[in-house]
Length: 93
Image (cartoon, rainbow, N blue to C red):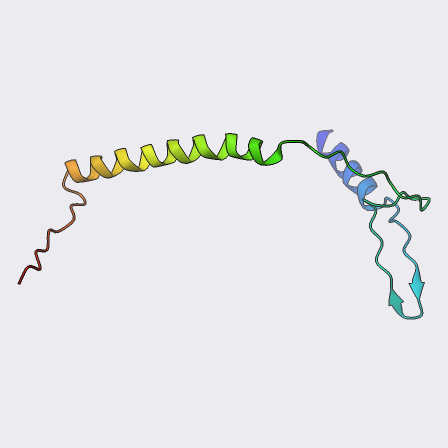
């Protein structure tokens, strides 16, 4: 029953009418449904989110910090178990 409903939903989505775009001769003029309604009216400007950069910073900085701590602890673990130990090359010659 669920698969029949899924197929019906997919078929109805595929058969939905596409937005009408005008053709000038042989060239097709692109239409953007995100800017215009189906009747041709221009949609209002989207709402602008204030403090976007600050919000991005509040998300990025903690995750960068957590990532560096995980990397540092994993590098210490590898060195402790002698899996990865950098060679000490003394080039004082």
